[in-house]
Amino acid sequence: MDFLSQPLLEHSALFWEGYRNTVLLTVGALLGASVIGVIGASLRVWGGPALSSLAVAYVEFFRNTPLLVQLSFFAVLLAPANLGITGDPIVVGLIGLSIYTGAYVTEVVRSGILSVDPRQIESARSLGLSQVQSLRLVVLPQAIRTVIPPLGNLAIALVKNTAIVSAIAATEMLKVAGIIETRTASFDGYLAVLVGYWSLTIPLAFLVDLSERRLGFAR
Amino acid sequence: MRKLIAGLIVLAFVVVACSTDSGGSASPAGPSFAADSTMAKIQTAGKLVCGTKFDVVGFGFKNPTTNEVEGLDADLCRAVAEGLGVPPEFVEAISANRLPFLTEDKVDLVASTMTATDERRLEIDFSKIYYVAGQSLLVKSDSTIQTVDDLNGKKVCSGEGSTSEKNVTERAPTAELLLFKTYTEAGQALADGRCEAVSTDDTILFGLAQNIPGTELRGGVFTDEPLGIGIKKGKDDFVAFIDSTLEAMKADGRLKALYDKNVKPYTGQDVEAPF
Image (cartoon, rainbow over all chains, first blue to last red; front, side):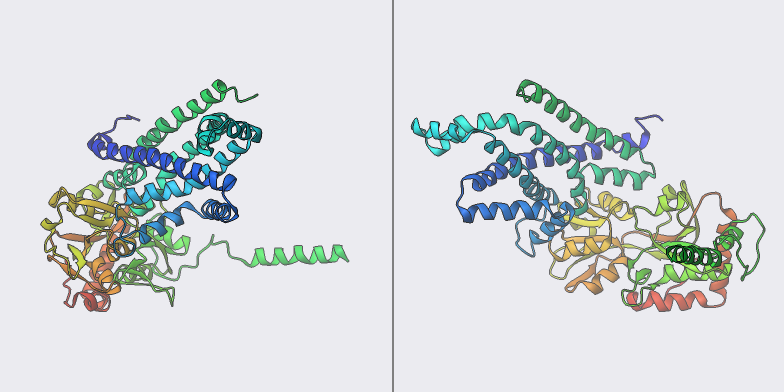
């Protein structure tokens, strides 16, 4: 099959728009989920009973409901006629994916924090470092070793989950493939898009491998 | 005792299996056709599988209380099925999957408010045009949008893979398109403000306008959308059969009755058969 087919070439601008949006959703949600994850994990480990329960409720709710349902819900909730925050499906996708992935990141970061010997914090505090400084300079650098491989896998899952944002009308890669198919009655769009997803997940998988080796994961 | 029960269960299965008709032999209840014709094959299969919309009022609409598919497209399918002497079976065919359903033989025909475009004629065959719709706009009553040219720079909802979204891009190149899999979702997005207009065939918009309060059609129709029944290529005998069924229905007034029943209540106007 001639891979650079005519239908594909005619729609190349559309394909790149979809690719850009997929990358945007991935990178944006990864950042959002990381922030949420660190906050959530901190609340779980060091927050009082109230904050800790809040974090547990958040994690349990967003890990145990389908992403598609969450996105559809957010799309309507944030719409101009309701909360009026945004009508843009990409923004809704960023928010929804960050919250969903953040629940998983919370658990990963939490296990990373717990993997660091508590005496490390005690020693850091007794040396005069504040809680935040201890976290930043002592705990997190050590927690990172435990955290990077599962985070890498979450990132790969995130790339694939961006496809679900097509259901709320975002013009990302899956939507583009559908548009090309129905405009040209050919499935070359889907082939191109599969390659597009590979181009994102394979480097990520490679980075996860690399980091596992470099960080001397098997202690 | 256990052996007796097991034996009875096996016997029950055998009885049920033997009494179920596996559909291999059909009793020809309708007119007969040449042995290897598409019509004969459909009669052997015992049913006419039609792809229709399930959410377009007036054309293909699944009534939630009766579970029956109502509308012009569905009634045309019933007429063809009657001509073959088999019952119709309805499958939901949304804009995005109706062509693959045909080419993959998942359905015998598609009557799904499908515009007969030259592009589509390269992939499938069409019957005679049974209705000429037109693309229009559905907006909130307090919207400033009057015509399709006002859509530039605005968010417009439509259906994925329909001729509608292409027409909007051509007339208003800077309109931002939000494409959904079904028009009900597009209507919902209009209702909660995620887009400022829904653009597709007026036939679909009438149904949406009815269900979403505070909306109205604007700008008249800016395209000609000839609707035809879609058939997989290579079934010329079936196309001819459907066309002759349509001709017969036009001649004896059945077609007009279908227009009056399904379309006139929403457009308020008499429909003239376009063939």
